[in-house]
Length: 110
Image 1: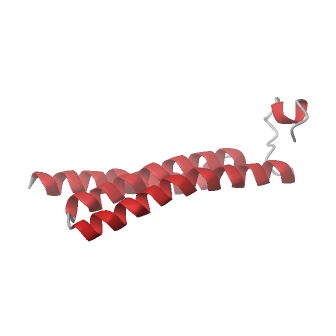
Image 2: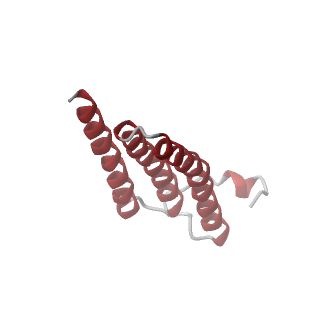
């Protein structure tokens, strides 16, 4: 009973974070903030969903596979978000009209 409540809560919170990441893609003004918000919210949301699956199915094989998926996800999502933001910045599409400070450009690291 308590395990099913914990699993349900983790699934709902995780799904809410993934939905929030999707909402961020639609509402945020520029590619840099979109990549940042989506990579963080989706990573945490999927982390909670995988933890819920581990709690629900405690067989050794399922736990091993889910832990490997979790590690792969936590390594690749922040890196892919960084790569997308960096590509957007270098292509020139990332600068919204409200941005006034561009430190990488000012320091010659563009």
